[in-house]
Length: 424
Image 1: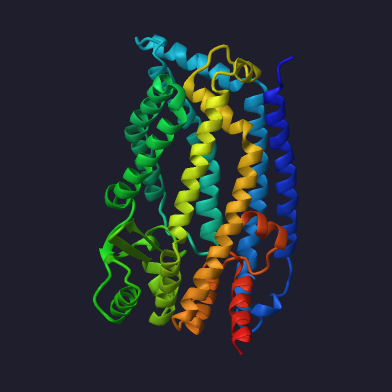
Image 2: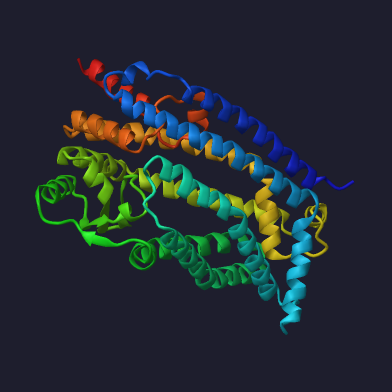
């Protein structure tokens, strides 16, 4: 008797939904607490706390609805054979427009085009509500409807330009890969990730945001001095106009080898009136670089990708897997999709493990910034970011351990205080 892959996948998806909803309910309860955590008393103003609480509860209510709709939709699609039906219809469409449906690449591209249209239609109401109701209600949204839809159209255009060559290459690799298929797939995705990380900040990101050099002044001098002290190969220092879309703030760095760049959101500069707070945040980011966190994460992701492709090669010719989901053929893309669904349990465990590692890295980067003498500035900078972004002040420990890649503010301040006590 064939293994019931489809029933097992749908069953696990529902179990995960129940488990994650339980965690969401715990977090919702924490968000409703009327008082600040003791660590934040006297640090966060009551006004900011009330605003943060209202914002977090709004997002929480919306999240419950979105997740319920998602699990119902996804389970229905899998259980009632919508995917094989849509695959068949996409083949018929290819034939209707005068092409050969036996050409797997054309058939697959037609299938993906339909999925993209479906995804845009079903996601649009949620995106609109999140942006123009919740974010606007709490003072974050700066987008106009025109800018929102323009970004969406640009995203679709990029997907149409970039997607087909990538999908075609993957199909050919799987068809011709032979016994070394996993290695070939990994090598292709590795090369693709390098190319995309190189091209994205230069060609793609500027389509959505404007990047300008940080003006000369004390802030630029301090960041360049910090980078020089750490031998960080800073080549360019940009400000991005994040304020055209949202008042949320951030900073990040990117680049390979001796060509590193740092990007500051203009909202971060506006919110942190003290330059030292911004420099402390950058010191934290440079800590990730100095401690090789980016390298460790990249290597781990490559190993996991290779293992995942290795698992795919073991089941890609499993007739039972395809038939369980209602397919009477074995297309490459469908095999990848079905395999991704069958390894959801392992993906959840890996995601949890990566979150634990990421949280540990955040504590280490905080400690690194402190060793550079930015302890008080980092504290005030973290508090400022928490206040201005109206991040959740009260968090459930189970929820944060499972979902958060960054520790809550309470834990980060406590860790900084603990290091002070140990030093004393």
